[in-house]
Image (cartoon, rainbow, N blue to C red; front, side):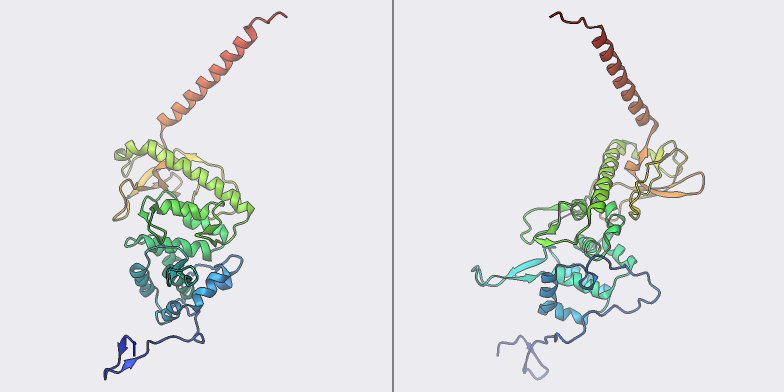
Length: 337
């Protein structure tokens, strides 16, 4: 009969197909009292997915079969087992162009399933920091980028913009990128689509804000390279540095925050890179200030007196050169006509 499964008596049984009439938006159990990740954006009823993509997913047999999985942990296991790329569509069918049909990828079917489970903030953070699979981390980023209000994108994704973990995002596995580069792609205004599928719009004000944030983040990354030789001296109790007191990765409230450097910080804790982190991943530091305030700082958020002196010295040299140049201009003889 052509069916793969058989019953207890060896009689062929049709594979179970779940009806469109089954409820799909079924939240996971045990959400009472938990802080949910708030779904926002312009079209939260379909989680800001492209309408055509959302329709394809809900009509796919694979997505219908996911109805039986009702816990976060089980869906995480499925992502670990099934997701090998994060393009929205895959191609299935014969090789001729006429019969080649776009089908939603496992990644985006499972992404919609995560939306239906209604994840808590802790669960989204668990995805973003998951040690077992880069694709779990990237699925967390997609959950934020599609499901969240644009004003929280930087708060959730900004700190990952220098992450060195590598993966292959495309179905062809032709090239690799890093988690950091993928996070930047989701935050860069010029990148308004993901493999031909629209990303939720951001708006001009936040476009500008993200460009400012990314520029500041680039400065942090460059300073980290300069500071790297000092790592061995940055132990618990160390001081004598300036620490950026601005919350680089806080919620974007639309205000321009001045960068404040405080000299009264002491390292209270050194947070090493996570297990299995790529070579070159740097630790973070918990800094405690004299007024009792604390801040988590990346290496590039620290400045040292020598660096500040060099900057002042370079500035004075430039000023002297400009001054000498002006004097030469005044002293130069006028040409006679």
